[in-house]
Image (cartoon, rainbow, N blue to C red; front, side, top):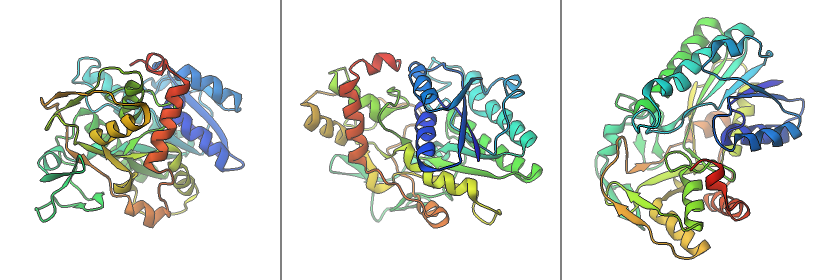
Length: 355
C-alpha cells in the first residue's frame, strides 16, 4: 500500500507518518510539504531518517502534482487550521482559500488521475456557530457545560456535537473552506468513482506541536506557562471557562488503516473523530494542571469576545466507534504530560515554532 501524506512535515502529518509506519507492514509513505511553518525542517530530517520520501511541493500549485508518484491513498493533512485565518490581519482570505479549498481541488484532480482514495482531515469548526454560541451553559469545576434541562440544538447530546448538527453559515472562513472541501471531495468520489472519507477532528494535540495560540492551544499554553510568558483568557466571562476536547493524532491511525482497507461504500462518508467528553478541558482547568506541574503562573483576563468563538465544543465520536470500531487511546492527562516533557526538553520551542 502506497500512502501519500500532504503537509507531512507539520505536526499532524509527521505524527501520522510515524504512527503508520509503526502500525502496518508493507506500507510505503511519501509526503509533500511546502515548509512554510517554522520547525517543519526538524520533522523533515527525522522522517527522512525513517526512509520516508519527502517532496517539496505546495498543494496550492497544480503543477507541483504533475510529477508526484502514484499512490493508493492520500491523507490530506495540509491546511491553515486557524479559525481566525483570513480575518486576523496575518493571512488574507484569499490565502486561506488557496490553502484549504483550492489545494483540495488539486488533490482531487491527483486522485482522479491516479485512481487514488482520499482521506480528508476536516474539523469541528464546520458546525454552525450561532447555535453553539447561543448554547445555554453552566459552570461546573471551572468549565462550561451544556445546561441540563435547557433546549439544545438538534444534533447535540450529552456526548457532544454529532454529524447531524447544522453546518449552516456562519462557520468562519476557515470552517467554510473545510466544509466546501468536504462537499467537493464527496462529489468527486461519486462522479469519478474513487473512495473518499471525511474525518472531522476535534482539537489535535501532542508533543512537538507547533505552539500557537490560534492553532495548537494546548501546546502553546503549556509551553508559555512553563516559560512564564504572558497568558490571557479571552472572551465570555474572561475566566477561561471555554471547553474543547483533545485528541492525539496518532490515535487516528487505527481508523485510517480501517478506511484505506475498506471495500464498498456502505458506510457513512463523514464521521467525527475526537477525544470526546472524557478528554475535554477548559483553559482554566488547563491552567490548574500547569500550576500543579510547573508552579503557579498568573493569567490575565480580557472579556472582549472574538469572532466565531464558542463556549463549548466537544465532538461525539460514537459513529466512528460504530462504523470503524475506533476510540481514542491516549488520555488527556497523557497528552498533557507528553507536551510538558517535550517543553522541558525543548525550552526554546515557542521560538522554533514561530510563536
